Each structure stands twice: as C-alpha cells, then as structure tokens.
Image 1: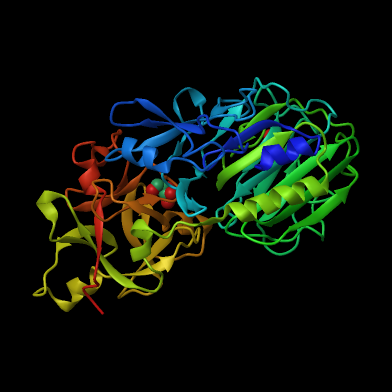
Image 2 (image 1 turned 120 degrees about the vertical axis):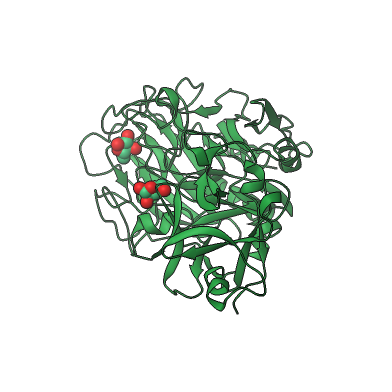
Length: 482
Ligand code: AHR
Ligand code: AHR
C-alpha cells in the first residue's frame, strides 16, 4: 500500500496528496501533474505507468522534446480537488504577469524512483504554487499531519520554502494562521544546531525549530539528498520529524506544546495549501519537492514510520543518466556549440568576458586553456554543477545581468547561485543544456558569439526564439588543455 493507504489505515486519511513522481494511493490511476510547452502553449496531463505506480516521465519527455515545459498543475490524488496551481499575489507580488509567481520548469529536478526516471518540482526563487479554496484541510485548531520529500541539497536562506497549511488570502493574518513544513537555512526566525538547513514549522511570523522562538538545540542540520520532512499539530501539541527517504527510519526533533510565544495556542489555521513560498506569498526561497500529503487528524508516529518504510522501499535515487553523467566533478572538459553555424566554436573566456571561439588543434595554448573548464559540484547545489576556469583557478563561469563572465568566487550566496548550472539533455537532442540555477528558465546560450543565460523568447535580443534550441545545446567534449 501507498502513503495515503497507510494514513487511512491509521485513521488519519489524506485530504491532499501531491506528487509529480508517483501515485500516493495503491489504486490511483489518474493524472499526477500537467505541463505546458512553450512551442504552442498546449498542455498535457502526465499520469502513472500503472495504477499505484510511478509517473510516466517518458510522456513528458516526448511532449516537451525540442521546447521547454512548465508544470502548470499538481493534481490532488485525494479526490478533494485540492490541486496546486500558479500562486497569486498576496502580501507580496510575484515576478510573473499579474503578480503571480513563476511556474517551475518541468525538467530541472530529474530523479529515479524504483529505477524509473521521474521529475520533481524545482523551485527557484520566484516560483510558487497555491490553492486558496480547499476542501477538508484543517482549520482553526483542528489536528492535521503532513509529510513531504525534498532534495536536502537544494535550499537557500530566503523566505520561505514551505509545503502545507496557509492563509486563504495570501496575506500575513497573524501568529498561528499557518502550519506548514519549512526547509532551508534562513535564520531570521528559528534555527537549530549547525549552519542548516533545518526542517522547521512555519506557523506564521515564525519558523519554529522547537518550543522557543529562535534557537532550539534538538533541531539538527539535515541535508539528505532525498529528505523526508514531517510537521504535525493538534491542540497545544505539535512535532517535527525527519529522516533519509532512501534508508532508515525517522527521528523526532521536537514533540511538545505549542511555542512559548503569544498567538500560537490555540492555532488559527485557515486551510489554504502552499508549495515553495511563505504564507504571505514571500517568494525568496529555493527547494525541490517530489511528493507530499496533508491529513485530517494527528497521525501517530507508527503511521508515519510506515510511510517512511514505504518511501525507502519505493527507492528514490539521483538520476545519473543523460548529460550529468558526462559532467563529473573533477573532470576537465570543453563545451562545443551545436548550432550549424558554429560547430567548431567552444565556450572560452577572454579577459573577463565569455564568448565562443573557433578552437582547433592548431590554436594557441592560451586559447586552448581559455576554452577548458574543470567541472565542480555546483557551488549553490550539489545537484547541479559549476565550471572553474582551467587557467584561472578560483574563477568560475557566472552570469551577471544575464551575460556570462569569468569571475573569481567572492564567496557570496549570489555568486554561488550565479555560478551554478543544472544540466539536462540538450534541447536540440545533442549534448547538454545548462539551466541557470537561480533563473532556471534561462539556459547558457551563444548569441552573436557572446554567451548569455537566455530564455526561449523574451525582451532581450539574446532571448530570441530563433535557433534557441540549437544555441542552448552544447557537446561536453574532451578538454583542449590537459
Ligand atoms: O512565518 C514566516 C513567514 O513570515 C511566513 O511564511 C510569511 O507569511 C511571513 O512573511
Ligand atoms: O544575471 C542576472 C543577475 O544579474 C545575477 O543574478 C546578478 O548577479 C545580477 O544582478
């Protein structure tokens, strides 16, 4: 049986069940999520390979071939239609038209589940999903539970990568008007031991790591590649639990009364559902979501332990096929253009700029070195990669104002994000395309022999949709300089 069968058997059934990777009921045979492609703006529902099974990612791959896809709907498998869609503006306006938040690129979080390729929901800052008109989700001080599986290596210090219960008007309605899982390393409110990231409860105007505002010693930094995170609450009682979704059991980081801060007992939950944002539509956060549910009633630890066992058996693993397999940290590589004009051109730096140049065996040693990069684990996320200059160690390929430069790592969070790129199969079917970590709908692209992060159509000349698929596809080649 699947997680929602386990919760039902425990007397605390799911009232919302979201996943882009698998069915959360043994009998579920409907759509998991919907994608929309850029080429013609049409949509396609992505379902399961069999009832109760994993997502049919091949259907997404064929529908999205040669174009880009966004995740437009994450369906609710519980039968209550508590689906998640593009989050509307609230206390804060999002970056998309009308103040909505961005939708997630559908291909940025590949993984495997039981050996099958699947895709998670990659939340870059500005991305958010929400449902403000739900059915059956806890309100007021009613009991509820929730778990989610995140990428524990993908997080940041922005507010607030959440999954769970929030305000129905997308505004901050005061202490106790939320109850959601938070994951990340922001220290504005609560935190635990180490430097983070931490699993905390977002209860509005506070991320809580235990009974106290601020520090609680029992909430450890935790960053499993696949992280099970749990928050549950009932009258004057709540808990934080977490574990490695790939092995072992759950640990309890907090189990006790509501925070010793006014306004959180009783709770004033409103019953909206958020993913990737704060209750007031704060959208500074990053993370990756694979699956999650919300229940009615306070689940027992035993029920959650059985869900964790189900996760371990389901078998999440990193996706190692495709382009990332050729981008091994430590390897020296060169990146060759695939557009017909330019198949002898490679990404190289010159002064601090980044351009493409024709490089051949007859090229100078300097040109060859300038066109060689050492692959590093992504400075902002080990799920992605960074490119260190071969002849300027400590300098990396990074974007600034959407143009690429070779700059020394200044250690800032912005630099690390600007210098991190997430590989995926080349958009034109050749080689690898490299999505910007912090602008994930933008890919490394050559345009007039200068290199940018470009979107497929947009306001800048270098965003031109003409030959975009070719211009963002690069063959990872043997290094010109050893
Ligand atoms: O509780 C932390 C955050 O504070 C909430 O997510 C948001 O609504 C508010 O800004
Ligand atoms: O390249 C886009 C943004 O422009 C980068 O994140 C930042 O460095 C600059 O402000």
